[in-house]
Image 1 (cartoon, rainbow, N blue to C red):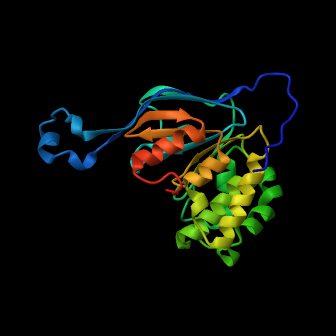
Image 2: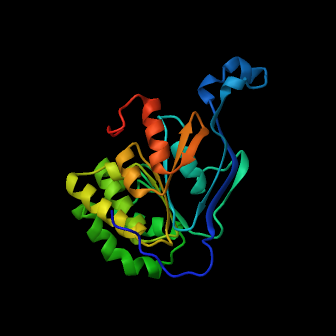
Image 3: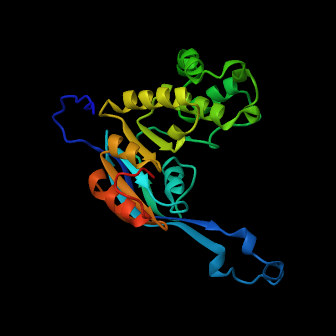
Length: 260
């Protein structure tokens, strides 16, 4: 495996992300009865779903953290909270002044707008100026490679086209922190290869911080410095990939050489 390029730095690496005692809850609206609303009764505890329960961890600048866990363990909720989409019900998230982008299917696009318009909308939401986006516009369109669909509303896109454009925007408009939610496994074979190579290029610079949610343990083993294992909203384990992933696989009932 190719080693990341190191820059000569006298100072110790600063923190990029600090998550402290994070709690995030959802209201289970489907469980709220008409009777309870009419009589203004207090909500039952079952109406509140706690997706993330007291999770704390830190990531130094330039590190790559993988997050694993079964479906419903709070992985995507965690990423959305770090991206600023969800607000903590308790605890805090400190990005230490870094810019952050979230790459996730179904997040970030206005489906009524065209792909071209969404390039500018997404870019400005990430904090880039119109001039900065204009400089990268052609590169984004060429990397996405969705042809004439760039001028069509996003609601007409397949999941593959959506992921191509989303990845292109996030990869070309580089932020300090990149949050990646399973998108490396979406798209055709050629795009998977191209996006994986681009991801390796982006994280080759040890000043960029990356958090990857993936069910592919082989990808996490190859790319990550550390792995965080979430289970039912709680942190079960955090450490080196070769320490965490074997125990996670054993817990999930798969062999050590099997990918999840």
